[in-house]
Image (cartoon, rainbow, N blue to C red):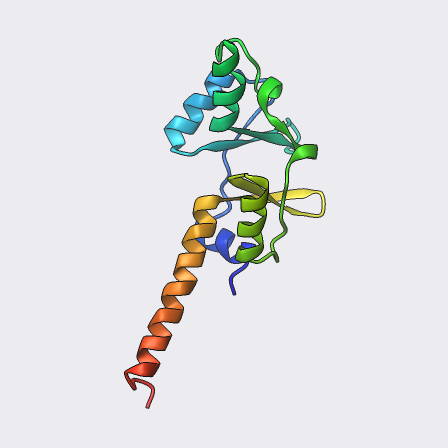
Length: 148
């Protein structure tokens, strides 16, 4: 059974981030450039302040007629204290249950108070499919007598 540590090892630990003092427009440009749906919001000492997602933009800027060029990231981000997170030893299945139950697409990975990575719904689905494919392969080989 795969865990968060396995996902991070496979994808790497590079996480894109932005300052809470940046404009939302800057965050959107970075997300578009990197082809991602969320940015971690980090203070100048590298501490996790929160997360900003495309959903935050859609629900807190567009719907309220605000300007992304004038609004600060800190005004629309989900603060760290309200985020759900996992540890490196949580299983992929635990991540899927949490993401589904809480309707979130990104889970910060923390070891104690320290932020160490970010797992997306895409990462979790990919890991689950990989596990299922490996199991199917093993069962097919067993049935066909390949192990005899």
